[in-house]
Image (cartoon, rainbow, N blue to C red; front, side):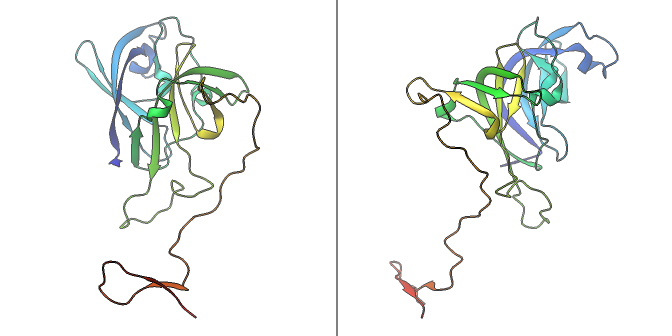
Length: 211
């Protein structure tokens, strides 16, 4: 798990000019770029790092800065993602079973969007020498973020409970199978004092039950 910065599958796209000009001007301009990394800082959205055609490198742009179509309409950041980063420790995974799958999600406004799965961001607290004051490992608070290339030309980052995946050979039931509830439990098998291992150095040890 990376701290602060992580590599991502490269995305060739456009960056909106106003994000290069501190929202002062250039709102009508778009420039080709190559996104190559992500930065995770708690209480800020995941931010992306990219290379431009003039050789310039830019750090810390939100997902709303990018589009893959020159005629893509600007969307507010809060409609593209729901949550800030949960930790400095971030993981980037491109799940095989989701690769290039069609995804849909419902934005905060209630509008529905569709697009193509790219990869997933996830967070944890991986340093036991630091006090864990966040929610990245709380069962009922943790969120991952699926990065989606939207059909309307933009990009989005959405958690599990906001997306639906289309797989023509598996996701064949249109109606919700079961109304899900958020998991609030931590599952472990090392919390029962009744069960102990043998008190010796045998490799193939037995499990004993205490009275």
